[in-house]
Length: 169
Image (tube, rainbow, N blue to C red):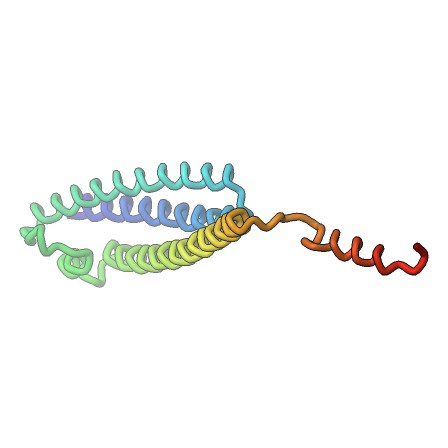
């Protein structure tokens, strides 16, 4: 049992590192959106995909370790949780304390990633709304036949009217 428990600790540590990387990338993504740096955003998303692939591999590895633990302990695989594994090992054991610590750290990190991704979602939504507003303003201007420029429409007529009433003529 000790061998698979240590393997579980290692997998969870690697998962925590991946989520830390995803959190860092999420903060970079926010910066890229705010600064409208599309090239940097593409690079961040590409790296993010690598981390997500790694998390997926680690999830499958963790599921395999859970399966091994289920076979060794006789616990039902479909109900198996980290808490049940810790209770089966014994909460006073050093490996259990380590599993508890990593579980807490992982939960905190996952929550940080989730919160940052929610903020990024809002930033992207605001950016898209601004782009839509700008496009609508441009389209309305074109459809309305209004010339966009630095001169005021009708200003030429005012100059002509002034000339008519100019006393010097």
